[in-house]
Image 1 (cartoon, one colour):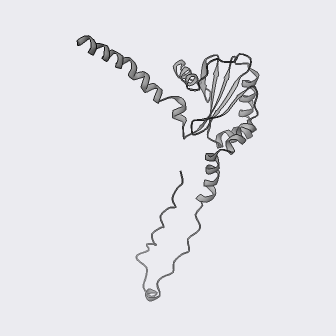
Image 2 (image 1 turned 135 degrees about the vertical axis):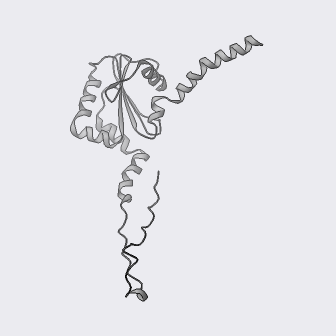
Image 3 (image 1 turned 180 degrees about the vertical axis):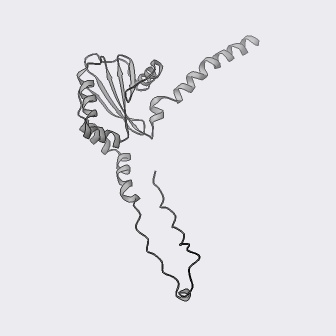
Length: 188
């Protein structure tokens, strides 16, 4: 009985951190907050990696990238970065596992766009234009809601109420104004 208990305890000790780590994956942390763009290349001089990173750092594309709540992940020869900051090897391997990549192509880089819902929206090998990525995002339902939200968020000006007819001779309640209307409901 003691050996069974000890075996079970050892099994839980080993399995618990692994199960907890799967729940806190990188893409799961990004879900609902940002849109990960992942570039996977065999070397740091891969033409797709170099041209895409260069074009995303140019002024108009950089603004469009930020406006769409995007995050850039790069995996070069199993070394990962998130927005230019190095990731540890365990996080990089977890990202590769989460993307279900079995074999990395040594000839062409792979570009993957993940939506805010956590699903792959683009899975492309080779060079891709940032405008194609941005247009894909703009066609997503979440992006349409985000674009419509600023237009509907501006409230219409409220008409100022005049003093009641019977109390026109009295002063108002010590300079207090009428209470403000409650804010309009937000659509998530």
